[in-house]
Image 1: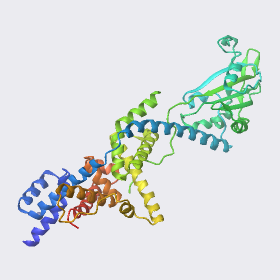
Image 2: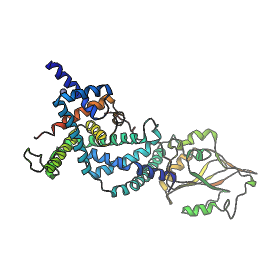
Image 3: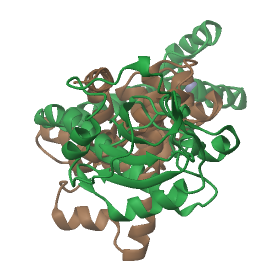
Image 4: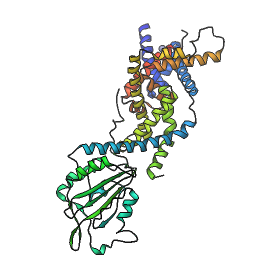
Length: 260
Length: 176
Ligand SMILES: [Zn+2]
């Protein structure tokens, strides 16, 4: 009988913690309640569990957060997030630039691939002035196709497009997915032969020589269907302005999940 | 503010208290908790496309908090080992906690407070998953299934962790 009682206490004690959490089945709860009415040591364990819980809650109340934390948290997170985008973008560009297999994408799939990328303007007839600022570029580019001097589609100029046989190689933006991109602008001439020439890269408003060299090297392998006017292929100046988007890139983060 | 930034702001506003409190309860340090909270939200933003809705968003965020706190803890432990300084030694040196009470302590309220401190010290010494289980259950009122999801373990493992943790904590109630 003694053995039976102690066995029952042992079993009951494994239930006590579950009962404390309100997760014990009804059947077991009934048995447990009956046992507790007649067993002081088990009641003691039950009371201990309650005391532990109370003390933990009281202790937690002592850890009162500084309320200003909550005013700061969101702005700080958003700022870090923006910084992270910029850093990632730069790293990605560097990685891609170091990878000769992948080529700078210019052309039809650009807008499909980079959300928010804006093909700003183009004009016929390459006029290779190279003003040193983005504003200068845009102004230069607007000689034709601007409000003051609109390019009339009636002239039948078609945009240059990446030639089908180099398109796959030119899809380097593809792995980036829609991406947060800082203010990056590319200016180039697409020649009558469908090559990219005089490429320049503006990074955040300033010319970036290293990026220009690297991307020019990659772009050298891309072929375009040249722009066409009525008379045939024409060289065009092209400016691509890549706007910042806030769509998340494909993350390189470990799974949130994890065992122990 | 763009739509995306707005959404981020709302997500932070909705969950920051829970995230910060849990981080604080697991790490016991305000700066670390703030830092962890930022990391958690960045992780949420990065990986929200993986959220499949098979749990409540909040439970999913709990899981991220737990994972990141666990990783930090591992890092600390390695570092502590390298530095040969125990957390207890640091606490003893800074005198953050009063000495354990004796059985003859006259002030009941003080007893209770000191007992609470002793219990928290014991809680902080528990293995991470036992401590997390206790915190999630007692302070966040989570069900076993939610705790299991957050810790990435089975319900049975949650039960046994809670049982073991409470076994240890109960001994702290006795005069030492
Ligand atoms: Zn009993």
